[in-house]
Image (cartoon, rainbow, N blue to C red; front, side, top):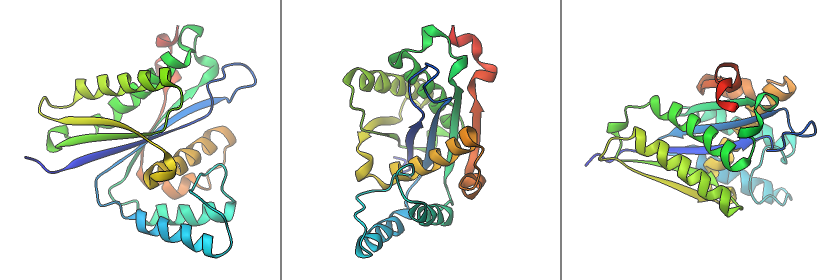
Length: 221
């Protein structure tokens, strides 16, 4: 039996508020790769270096971390880009029609499109299993919808003999969920604030930034 596993880690940026007070964009990003996960040791060492320097840091979160910490995390990510693929789905929320705005419809649909695009980039019969990780999802209704979207997408694309799982882990316990959070933050900053400083550090492995509303607007009404 083939012993290769494909890992996909997901993160979102922006909110589900479609009023004028909400974020302009919703961006969903995925990191896909195989083991070994070489950045883990460096991220762990950085965490405890920071603790020993007097900082109380439980885990890394790009939007909350100090810039000095972000600089060090991005340096680790940049050193460990080998074998990593990043894909993003960018949604300009004002173009989303009312029928698609409820979170239980919108999020699974976007997740399905992103996963389908990511998986199209791999020869899937080479893998024993595809394992998809998201952060913990606090709302049960949303969790069920997301699981269903991911499983439907995976079931439709994977070979009949392939296995897949969708796991919801707290990002505090998963360094790659923290890494995809950083990558998604960099992409979000580029789109929302025209700030490409961090984006350029990961640019070599960004395979796609699909501006969804530009070509798929009919699905939103």
